Amino acid sequence: MNLRIFQRTILVLAMSQGASCGGASSDVSRARAGDRNLTNANLTNANLTSANLANANLTSANLTNANLTDANLTNANLTGANLTNANLTNANLTNASLTDADLTGANLTGANLTDAILRDAQFQNADLTNARLNAAHLTGATLRGANLRGTNLRGADIAGADLTDAHLPSADLTNVTLRGANLTHADLHGANLDGANLPDANFTGANLTSANFANANFANANVSGADFTGAMGLGGANLSLVVCDTSTRWPAGITPPTCR
Image 1 (tube, rainbow, N blue to C red):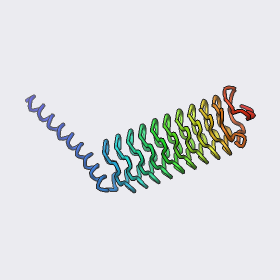
Image 2 (image 1 turned 180 degrees about the vertical axis):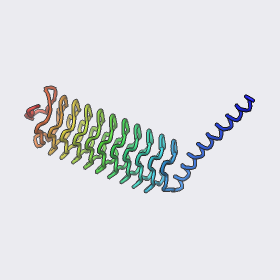
Image 3 (image 1 turned 135 degrees about the vertical axis):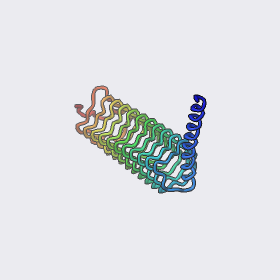
Image 4 (image 1 turned 90 degrees about the horizontal axis):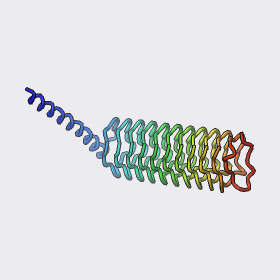
């Protein structure tokens, strides 16, 4: 009797596993075939290289570890999708919606996220090197430890985002909005923040060396312990009511503002 029970248990487990694998395989097949309704689809570890998923509905889909290199996700809806550790190298996500999506550890090198909606999305430790996020909506997004080296963020709205320990050397942040954003210990060496709107932003301990701040608005921003050595354009920036301290390092030739 015990042997029969054991055998039945093994059979049920095998059938359950087969059904689960079959479901994932079916979802991958549908995605490759151009099915645009992929809500809650299981695409874990899927190989979707160069797949055409433009206008697809991937709401709450699971794309953990998926390979989406060179994929076309233009206008796709990825709201609440799980893209943890996914490979999105050179993927096209223009106008895509990724509100509340999880891209922790994802590779977005060279990806195009122009005008993408990324509100409250998770990008912890993601690689966005040379990605295009111009005019993207990143309000409330988490980019802690993310690599944004050379990234194009012109005109992006990053208000209230968390960029603690983020890497943004040589990034283009022209006319970006960072109101209330947290950039504690962020690296913005050589970044371009011409016309950036930075009220109430936190730059505590940030590396701002050789960055361009022409016409930037620092009203009420916290730059305590920040390093502005070699920074340009501060003469024309708004430094009114800026919060700083004796450890803040200012570039030569600039009269430091009155700290509070």
